[in-house]
Amino acid sequence: MLIAELLRAKGSDVVTVRPDTPVSELLDRLARHNIGAVVVAEAGKVAGIASERDVVRRLAEQGASLLDRPVSEIMTRAVITCKTSDTIDALTVLMTENRVRHVPVLAAGALVGIVSIGDVVKSRIRQLELDRQQLEAYITQG
Image 1 (cartoon, helix red, strand yellow):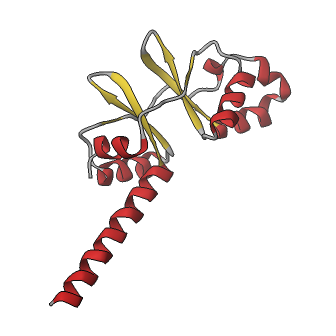
Image 2 (image 1 turned 90 degrees about the vertical axis):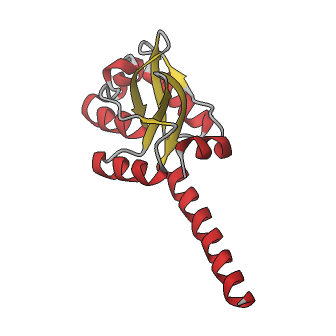
Image 3 (image 1 turned 180 degrees about the vertical axis):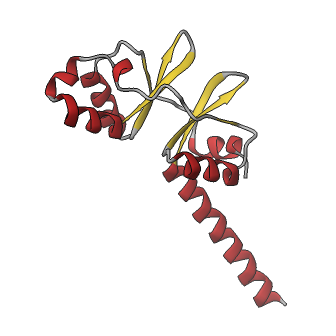
């Protein structure tokens, strides 16, 4: 299955923040949208990604004053991305090798979606269920 198909099924809405957004607002958006990461974008380009994990690690180091600091201070700048033409299998390998849980999707350099590890697992389960149904149909008909 291609990433484009996964995005068609799940939707392509992406929550973004600007690099100068306070960490407290980042947390508000994560909670409000029930998500684990947001793309940090500036001038229409991906500048980074900020996750719950980034916040927790920096809070442990810097304390509550972090909440007033800009997202740019905690975001991951080296963002792992994928294309709509990539496969779920290739994305699974990419996520595993790079130990990331959220991957922005780009098409012609533009942000068109984001895929989480949960989306990948859901897709895999859906495919396994379809395979099971096909095998059952084959066995009962033949």
